[in-house]
Image (cartoon, rainbow over all chains, first blue to last red; front, side, top):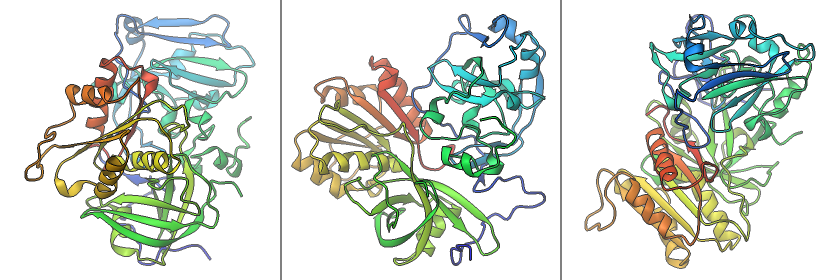
Length: 213
Length: 246
């Protein structure tokens, strides 16, 4: 017999196909969540790097990075703190485009995103390819603001949004899945909202057969 | 069973803190000692299968064993806070899991640094757990709470905070009212600014560990101002609170 809260019902019934992963609610605004002060990054010193298990590391300056092919993407995003926001409007560079610039070593299966300010988060490489991940440079037609991760943030919308590292500085390709900042603190190594992988103990319960964890 | 499995708690007390804030005390059969600053996830389930979750900070100290107190602000049109405020009575059961959170926590100890706590509105809740823990564990480190509220009726835990300050010379309570101050008020009556933070820092004998919790505008501004006072980034921990996106 499932647990029911007597008299509780959804305040805003969802219409059409359910875009809301389990436990989430829809918000219209764009909440800001960070663990410490917001870094202010001088674009003259900004760089983005791909390093680790690659034949030759590569880095881009701000101007070089902005000269890469960009595209619009309009994902639904899901934060582990329970809010979801539908049809957000971004512009940026696909990770597929970036990964074309490096030769991966065969052991490379995971990535650690690292950020200005010291934040890190880990992701399976498979979650970064095939149009699933971007470096976002614009939000709603304007340069991404510092509190939302500007000048550039990782955007991996099919995973909880803490995986979409703000103020991203680069990706380190790895052969082992090394936990990042929140993952060290007990959050999920994968963070799939549709499997409700919020915390590390949710990973064991969920289907991770497609991943080599 | 891991500590993050869902469990059913029983509401043992509901205390109004302000006209829009209530504290729900829940007894838990599988209680785990938390660290001050952590939260629980609470899940509501409708008869048709719909479920939704929210996170609520723990207000009680870990010394209060076997139960947790969650302080909940009523959000306009809030699906969960509305149900909790209007639909839940003592004796009812609620589903929750926790404690959760590993960064916005105070690593208390006899050698802990001075504590600078800055709260906006219901952002005071996790900071109250730190102060209650400090009091119950008789920790000697000096502490300041700078608490920004809009009006006199919004001061959550007012009597307890004032009693704590009166009884403990190492703890200072600084209130600032941003809209309307009480009659005869001679203290601060403006948003938290650099001068107010400098005053709070100067009350402490050494470089503080800072915890800032409240709406985004306050948190962004206070964290930046604390950096400008020369405090290192890793001494400034932040958490957003209250209605999203304000």
